[in-house]
Length: 134
Image (cartoon, rainbow, N blue to C red):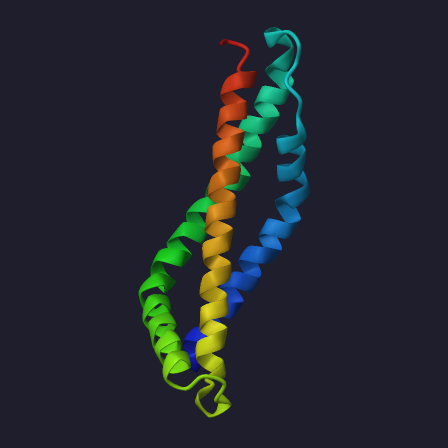
């Protein structure tokens, strides 16, 4: 389990580094205002479409795949943890740091998947509204 935690931490760390590198551009795409005339949105349309297609979509897919890979073990460890807490409340003798870290990594992956999926959806709608062709 320690090797799995190390691998997942490294993968999640690389993912977060890429996300942080692209975060400003993703935020800028989200902040683009709709033009008053539809034909004025061509440049914004291309920018939002590019960021959504080449930044947000790959991050969303990677995060989703990582979550799907982690989820079966995460659910199992989560249910064992809840059972242990219910059987032995406030008894730190049963505390397992490896399980806690695995739960934290899984939760982070789930949060990123939801967040990026929502960002992709919002940018997809914005792309359709900015499309100069209508």
